[in-house]
Image 1 (tube, helix red, strand yellow):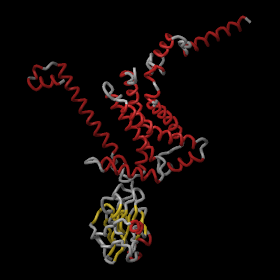
Image 2 (cartoon, each protein chain N blue to C red; image 1 turned 135 degrees about the horizontal axis):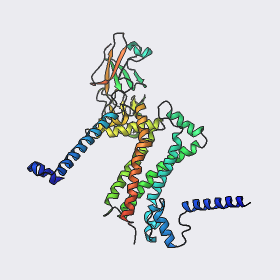
Image 3 (tube, rainbow over the protein chains, first blue to last red; image 1 turned 60 degrees about the horizontal axis):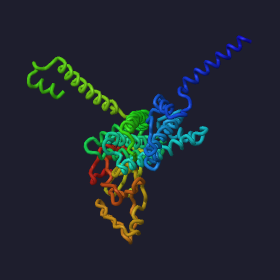
Image 4 (cartoon, each protein chain N blue to C red; image 1 turned 90 degrees about the vertical axis):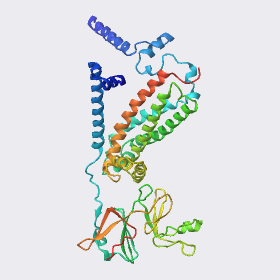
Length: 243
Length: 194
């Protein structure tokens, strides 16, 4: 009996230690505890320890930057799911997309989430940019972050463009034919740029693979790094909202 | 850095070891970066593509000129080429829209809806044909992407297309079959006489 009691006590103390290792500060019942939690927690450190109510007025930011980031996360997760079934070759791509729609359980849900979140992200990024412009939040000292933001807009649009080819239907192929022909109109480097984009003279196997690689690795990676800088600068430059 | 370079140019004996190494380091870094950029671009540029070769002979019955009626228009959709036969011979059109590269589609009538709507349609500069109220229907091509239209002989007359579609080389091979080379653009007066 004594042995069992000792074992149970030991278990409780280990459990207590584990709990206090994860929940290091207890409930944020006072401002002091809340501040200390925000200061030492990795997830919460994105937020300032102290925020004025007026800084986070919904009617000022409309949550557009946060929505864009949320949609980026949705796209990363659903995109990862889609990669389990999608093979980027002209032999398989269209059939795999059809399978996702009609054969894979919840495949249609995941693909449609990916598609609609992509459309929505383009819209929220544009609106975010419009909001920053209209409130004059791009002005000194935030010019650098405005620049990062324009690059993020470019990344968003390139992700849309590269993703557009992947279903490999008629719309995809001709949209990319048109898009890369627009690139060809650029002076001097235009035709060469198109050749590099397509990996050939027409949209084909090489193009699909290139666009896939850029869509699932290249552009998200660059986008993620730029986002890290973007959020860091938001914190360092301070909120532009009312005082 | 700028001061280091200035010293290097004016009197290299004045330069410290530290600034010499700094300059050497930056020059090395810049050269290595330039080479890396160059090799990256060359790496993604394919030296060999496994695309359909530009020159081909139409397969089957379409390989032989005698199977084309005078005044006929034949679309080889897989090759994106059109072979027209007129009184004075054969010519081939590269079926790539000159606006942004889609594939226009053949229709026996591409003009009468415009004539009906009262749109002024220019004369075909090559054949001199013109769609009129009395005779509104002319054959030709419509592009599905942005609505460019071409007469049967590839001359553009409507929509955003900036110029006629390219005419490409066609000749008679030794085995008596047609031979089309899509990589060779020819003049609008070109005809293959058979």
